[in-house]
Image (cartoon, rainbow, N blue to C red; front, side, top):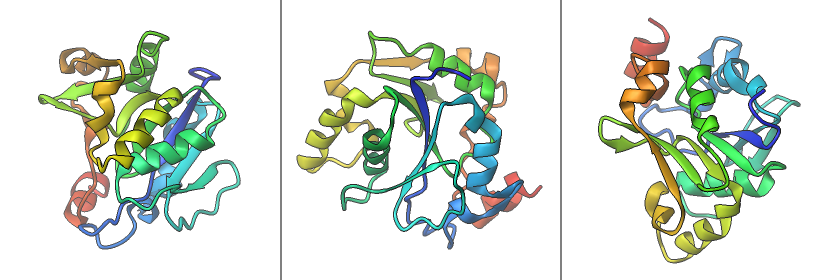
Length: 195
């Protein structure tokens, strides 16, 4: 286990318009995509939280959390999970990222300390906010940002302390960067997951 103060927070609240069906319910090893992710890395954490809207999950070993605000943004899912968490930090992961490696999880969680609020990978020059560590103490800053009309996940970063983890370092733990593959379309699902 990584830390008793870290929860795994899986976001499953997206519209899945490009996939055409809820991504978290796609058939996968162990049942559904959510099951696959939980089976893969859930045991590393003291608790597992799944946040979204009208989630149809049949698991008794996870906290299922409804979005606490009406805005359509992954940030609402992050906020909802933070409010439900019994830990000080959450490791956020999108439900369409089934290849996350435990070694990467260990790397990112090891960088979280009292001096930072967010630990986030930078891949191909872009921040990866849906595979990152967040302090639950940032929930008030997230709410203020949402109240101001903001929706971008990284939009509140200017109000918190952020540690970026470089791609070169991440490749030591995940050389092909498979942890960051998103299954957004039926073709993605066929090509990456079913192949």
